[in-house]
Length: 575
Image 1 (tube, one colour):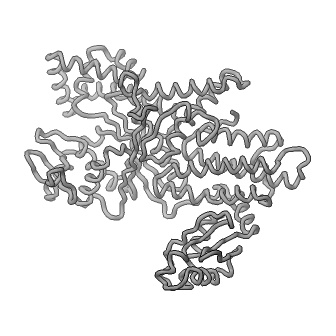
Image 2: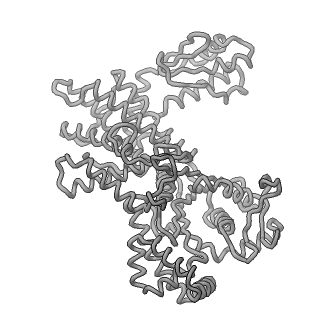
């Protein structure tokens, strides 16, 4: 089962090599869907000038090399190739796909080790909406890579270390462990932090204790470490509530926070300095990767040890990249982090290559996450200008979804369960349906609509297909008759479904989940057209045709459900 456009690309490239020489084998055939045929190849128009021949003459030469192609190839106009695939070829391919347990999605061989750094909330503060996109996009990429057979190592790089923890631990002692745990588990991390900060700024005795606590924390004092664990365990339990609500696959085993790298920082700096890669500059230990200059045209430093001896993000990121390459044996490292960190990561990657820690055989990529905006086009915040708590946003999504479902005849528990799926599906799909590096407007009204390119529409599309099978008194797995795409609407749907495996591979290759969202939305629209034009379970439908069409319904359902699962979007059986 093969994407028709991919088959055509390979065959036309072979024809180019046969007609004009091997040096033209990698030319883009410029194949696009066509209203005059299944596809149109425009490569003759772009090659003609180089070959010093007319476009039509080039097109005729290509057509002559496609004489054994499973379909018809015609030259039209000044040199367009109109290509129509044989119905028998399409039927054969779609039935191979239907018989494939993986629904046309292959596996990558040899499998790679993919390290994905995503979510990474700051344990010293509340998990806010800024963490939503990295969590959703990163989790989708993890699901896709695992489905393709790669070994995925999730890394939740928590902000769980540093000087703020001195005052956070002292505040814990002031209010008592039990009260602190209750507050942190309830998601009041920001309020907890602010209370500690007020005391730090206004109480000299507290400030002195907090600074002393930083020293005991960094030295590994057992009692201080116990208190740090009390704080972190409560905070992580709260994070897990959000992850459970979102349905993401992160677990405690995936936590690799700043505290994990802290013991490595001194050696990281010493090794870089001993190798001559890092040098002292104005009292700080710095890396100067080539090609980075400031506004004054002077080399831009990546500071790995501050002049006061402290460490920062660059220190941790250099230790992390060495660990991920050397210890985790990564083939590819994806950093699903805000776009505003682009310069930082370019410098980290360049510095790691300069140090020999990031060999050419390993790819490090910044999957840039654009900003979430409110309806006013500004950074998404509360009316008072504060960051919106993520848990509040997700609970509102569920509440709004429940209102949308108020007229459905379900018991309260079922309605709540469906509303949870619809609310989370709406939030996640809205993010994954746009390119991850663009800014996007968070709009509950739009994302909860049951029409258009939204999560609820996609969920409804799958529920609609399941309702067809309930009316047919058949399980989708029992629809095993061959698919015969006889009608134009059937043919259009089948041609699109055949591209599923290729799209999943493209998502992994380019780290772009929105490609899959676009594919699934188009599949849902084509299915709607098919269902309107080709009766399936209506009285009077020929039993054989009914069986063929039910098989096509079952394949479409598998593609939609598999694709939505790779995006992390839940699929309720009823809506």
